[in-house]
Image (tube, rainbow, N blue to C red; front, side, top):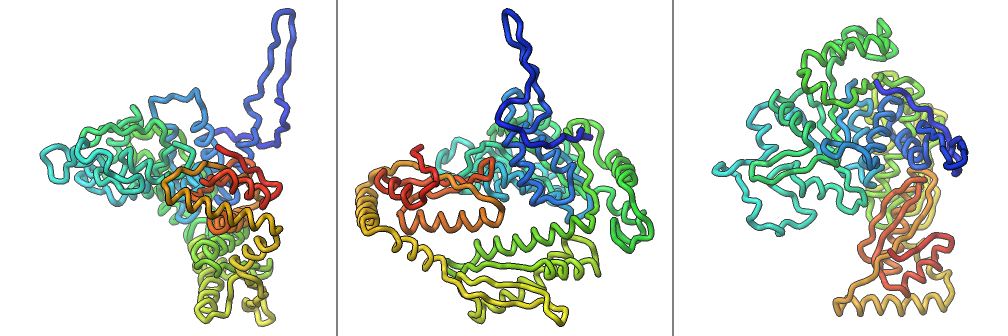
Length: 487
């Protein structure tokens, strides 16, 4: 198991001891110290994957390996097996890694072990060879696939791995294999070759490069035996026997030997056993689930309908107690949040009670049930219009002129310049709100094209967009202290 790393804030000056002699200066390095990027990664990861410190260590290991210029380029970046009860954060670990590398939790290839129970299904990963049904000559129609179009040859083709991370500045691929233990033995033989050489030749002859890929496999291996050992559920408060970490590791180790051949196990860089969630972990997950509801409000509602959700601590405790009375699991918590928060809000939205820009306060009522109250606000469109109207008449005149120039240039086929805007954020919620609002302003007010956002270390939200220099000047004035540069 990986040795735990000590996390500490690092000053800008290097923590090193210099020894000076007549001809040279020797600097004693401290490889254990955590730099600013690692500290940012640790903070962001811990906000999403809660109660699993060993998963954090492995995710940080993968993140550092992906940026290490000295790593072995003849094999994948890392191969990790995550084992534990359902809904403890195994799949979420891969999604969070994708989010922090690419700004999108879905920027990965997803495979289900259960989809490869038979040998012919495993062969589908390689694609049909010549003279077989479904074979596609790599020379035919070359270049015709749009960058966002699915390559039908194989889900793990070079094209598909690039497609899922479109818009990202990082070229790291992530392949997630959920419930890997359900796959056929041929499935593991296929991956053993990939893990060794970092390549795979598809049926049509295309060579796929996995040297810049992180593999994450999840499994519930041994969890049924652990639950039986606990006589009532792993980690539940009503268990007849408390299951220790050593118990779980012993059961999982035996199961690993029974299911995975030694030559496959030896190619895995780290095995992480996810632990049952504790009460304090569940309390933090309640906050995270509420933040996810807000994220869906910001993403899924039509323009101008977004509103803010404020949940009191007492209301959060109510959600937690409703969860603990049945099963201490994330699955049960999600059901409670849906029943007590999402469903009532959905009904009010359908009735038109909640308007864009409102603040919905959720508290615990005197009757012991959740209470909802609405604080009226203004919609995002009204807020944007008010901000523009507050600018000087000179600004508005220059804005209209720049808008006309952009429309004229585009109609004549001219190219726009590429610029970036950097915006610091303090939390995941403020990140979602800021990203949505700034993107709307760039597109609607400044007529920016190809607007994309990327989260960078130190919680900086960076937008790239295409426009003209006159409009970029206006963007700088509008956002004041924010940094706008040409790329």
